[in-house]
Amino acid sequence: MFQDLELKNILLKTNALGEKELSLHSEEAKNRNQSLEEYLIGKKIINEEQLYQTAASFYKIPFINLKNQAVRKDILFMIPEPLAVTHRIIAFDKTETELKVAVLNPQDLQIFEFLRKKTALDVQIYLTNPESFNEVIKNYHKGLKAEFQELTADTTASEADSEESKDKKLKALAEDLPVIRIVDTLLEYAILENASDIHIEPVEKQITVRYRIDGVLRNVMTLPKSVHSGIIARIKILSDLKLDEHRLPQDGRFKVSATGYNVSFRVSIIPTYDGEKAVLRLLNEKTSLLSLEQLGFQPKVLPLVKRNIKKPHGLILVTGPTGSGKTTTLYAILNVLNRPEVNITTIEDPIEYRMQGINQSQVNPKIGYTFANGLRAYLRQDPDIIMVGEIRDKETAEIAIHAALTGHLVLSTLHTNDAPTTLPRLSEMGIPAFLVASTVNVIVAQRLVRKICQDCIESYTLNKDEMEQLEKQVNLTSIIQTLEKEGIITKKQAKESLLFYRGKGCKKCGNEGYKGRLGIYEVMEVDHEISEMILKGTSGGEMQQKAKEKGMITILEDGFIKAKTGITTIEEILRVTKE
Image 1 (cartoon, rainbow, N blue to C red):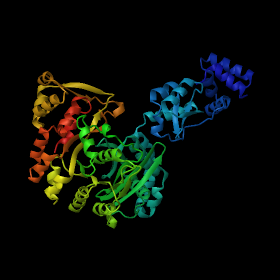
Image 2: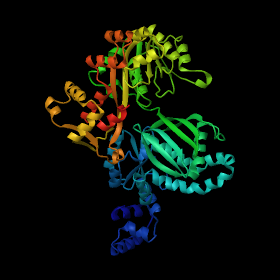
Image 3: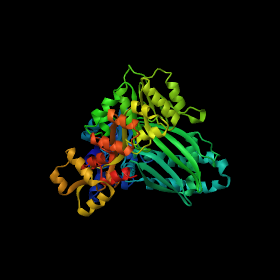
Image 4: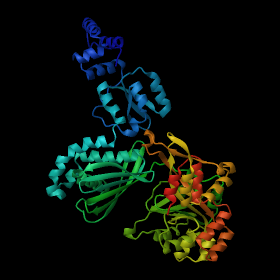
């Protein structure tokens, strides 16, 4: 809102009102105890938009009405809400070099300079009017639910009409504007929330939408059943799938590109009792690769990993369940190995990260291009380092082992619970023990745990009852000994109470108490003694005992080290390590 003196100057200099007329209005506004702006707009002498357009021409900046403009959430939140409210400023668009902001006070130079420094972008200023500004400011509080209530209100009637000849109308339905906006909003929120998967699940009378965020599925929305066919049809069109196929599973993919993100979606649609269910996996192609240091290896474990990945040949295995971050670890290793003098090739399903200088290939079982066939073909391409997305069968395992034996460094993954049981698993797949013993360099077993939100972290002390309960689930004595040995706690602390941490829950973490994820690891080097045990057919349990004697930290112990140092919680460690 303009000060009276400033507004008089604007109106006179732009000839919007004459001096005599303006003087009368100003006097009347004073008598009514109103500002000049309130009086002029209230009496409809000039409407709000005209007034701010006039001011924009006076200040020689463009005017924008944001009322019907969709503002992306990631751009909006570039200016925190308190700052936006205090300085009456909204970020509404962005390019690679420029941030566009709408303001009510174009002379607030301090905030513009602050934004230039904070964002490292040129700030382009637009003047807007209070009505459109207040409309956009609501988006800080408008959640997914509110947004969908508006969108689905438009689609219910048309959806109901389409039931009688659904197949014929599916294409038209998928191109219906409200349906497009619903799907676009679902995708946008998932990207901004850093979700890894979107589940769109029909039940009898509604659709449940869930996002997997930091490895945990969360209900985010329920939609009326009437929009189901339109949403599925829209996803099928984006993924280039058959619109009229409702009885068989279908798989596809599509991309969403915008300033700030470039996301690939892998789509799986299956028929269920209440209709077709869609699951979309998000792969952010702009995600920057993590270094080995950023992954969360303990300081004494990191040199062991680096030593083994620099060996000229052999097998490096990363193990863990689906979604435990195995591919991220492999790519962090490849990042270290990626040099112009080596030929690195990968065969994956799917390609999750794009990396310069590496030859990446994606399997396609439909045409017979499997891990085994791809690996066999790659061996004729003079590789130095090969990454195989996963060892799923005996054939792939045999080719990988022989490649490691003949002078190649081979990286791959397996689905085992810990590092020691990986070695017997290879033998169970039919690989002779002497080959396993002579090719495997190192095994990294891992899980992903959610990190405590640092904005609402609090400490607490384990009481006697909690210690007893914990003792039933884990070998607490052994864990405390490891914490002592690693210098995390003293003997005195071990005898007294143990201090741990958790998140209370706040706005920034969606009241979850967690934000972001980190790996917990178990790294086992296959040295001469472990090789001897493999040849003798020793069990995984005995190998684990030997590795622990030699200083190996188990996944559980690594988790408790990170819980004790305030990175994660005991509950998280138990959630991901329980079998």
